[in-house]
Amino acid sequence: MTVIKRNFSDFDTAKFMRFLNEAVRKQEKVSFEMTRPVNESVVHYLVEITPIYIRGDHIGTIVLKKDITEHKMNLEKVMQLNRQLHGLATRDGLTQAYNRYFFDERLQQEIDLVNRLQAYGRKPDKSINNFGLIMFDIDHFKIYNDTNGHLAGDELLQTIVSIVKDALYPTDVLCRYGGEEFAVICRQTPEKGIRVAAEKIRKTVENYNFKFQDKQPGGNLTVSIGAAYCSTANMQKDDLIKKADNNLYLAKNSGRNRVVF
Picture 1: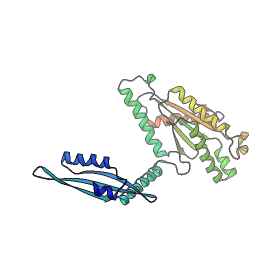
Picture 2: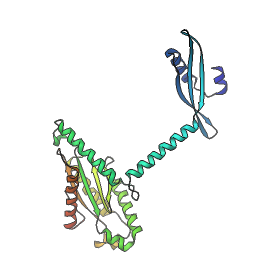
Picture 3: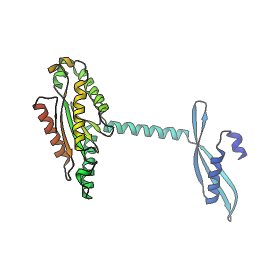
Picture 4: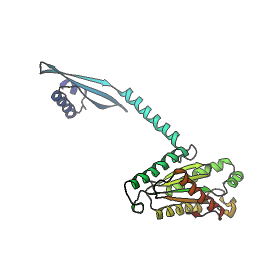
C-alpha cells in the first residue's frame, strides 16, 4: 500500500482495500478499473489483485496494474461506429426522420403488442396500449419542386419533419414513408388522441411560413392527412397501412388540407 500511495497520490485507497479484502476473503483474483487524469487527458488502468495461498495460509498478494487506455479508446470508437451504422440503417438520409425499414418493424411491434394484450383478456376500450397510424403528404409538392427547384424541395422536406416532430408527443414515431409522404405511429394513444394529433399536424403545417409558399395553389403550403386506429386483435400491418392510406387519398380528393379519420 505504501508503494501504491507513493506512485499514485490520488489513488482511491478505500476502493482498493475493498477489493483487496474481497480477493483475500474469496481466495480468488479480483479485477477493477481505475482512472487518473494526466495533463488534459485521462489514463485508464485495469488493476488485478491475486492473493497467494500456501496450504491454506495467505502469504502475500500480487497486484498487477495494466494500462488499458488504448483499449478503452478503441472500444469507444467501435461503439460510436455502431451508433452511426444504426443511424444509417434506421434514419432517412435527407430528413433524419425514421426510414421505411424502421417504420415497418416498429408498426409490426405495436400490432403485436395489441394482439398479445387482447390474448390475455384485456378489453380493447380500456387500454392505453392501443395506437393509431397517421399518414400525410405535402399538397402540390410537384408544383413546389418544379417551380423552386429540387434543392428547395429537399429543404422543404427537412422543414416539414422539423416542425411536425416538435408538434408531436415524444413517444410518437415520425417516419418518412416515401417521397413527400410521411407516417406517424402514435403509441399508447386513445382514439380521440389520434384525431387531436392528426389535426395538430395539419394546423402546424398550415400556419407555418414556408419559403415560396405564396407560389403554391391557394397561396399556402398544406398537407393532407389520413388516419386509422388499431384497437382490435389480428389486425394485419398491410391492412392498417391501407386503411390510413385510403383515408389520405380521400383527404386529397375532397379538397386537400384536411384530415380523414
